[in-house]
Length: 382
Image (cartoon, rainbow, N blue to C red; front, top):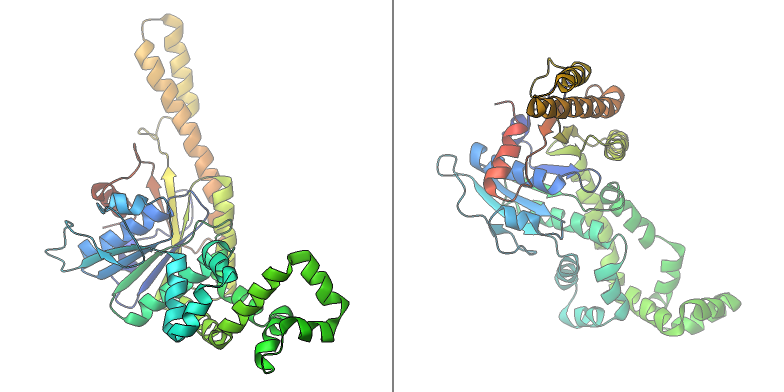
């Protein structure tokens, strides 16, 4: 962050080198560089600090695979070859969440094959496991819990989903619990818990006109599919809730470090500030803010006003076109830097004790390991 701000400086090496930190969660608004930041952190943890690291991305654009030199990523961790870990002894693995496969794996792990086949064939399950809002965020929590439980990794770096709101990742367990405890769900479960009586006969006996209205609005077949899905998953619901709550507790523990990622733009900084407030309310450990794509003039002593005035003087006498262009470009960059500092100050003024670090805008998109190393070095003071 700029020196004018009172916030302490974030040094990610202190986080990555700490053996007590086993999870780093990168979160923030969409389009601010979370995926690149997560990959850079994981690479630095492996190369510089010798940690056996896995980075989990939820980014469907496959930028992480490309930057790490992998042809593809899937739901299974793949080791990244060709990185500099000879001296450190670390390892880097990468994976991309496949929410449907993760959901399928949960079903297979917690039901018998016959019941699993019934669930997989249910149209409601097929829709929910692939497209329903919130499924991706909850399955990200499931996958994080699975990786943590395996105990194979010194460090897990999570690139949170590109959701409408970054808070969806934190809210997934609570939303699931509300769904599982909801009145309509208990109603749909009633046939399975009352000797297998027909969904419709039970509902009609209990609610009369209500059931006919529901069938008319959403359709008899959909209601049947939903009832069958809920009944098939009945024995698994307690496990879903338990694992969600356990992962939530892990996110509150000292072994987890949240890093907010933002760009010096009003919406992104506002989202980061809102998230910081939520983390504080939920007693989750916020380690710092990474402000990406920051612009700084090469000559800080020459401000925009002086640079533009000099350009106008030279332009008036002629013969200095190249110098005039450079001075005007410098003035525009200096003005942009001031605007970015003012935007960033909104966060640091609200959270003055949160460490922060600025990462300068790169001349081109990061697309390889060398670019990730540059980003990792920019986040470190060593």
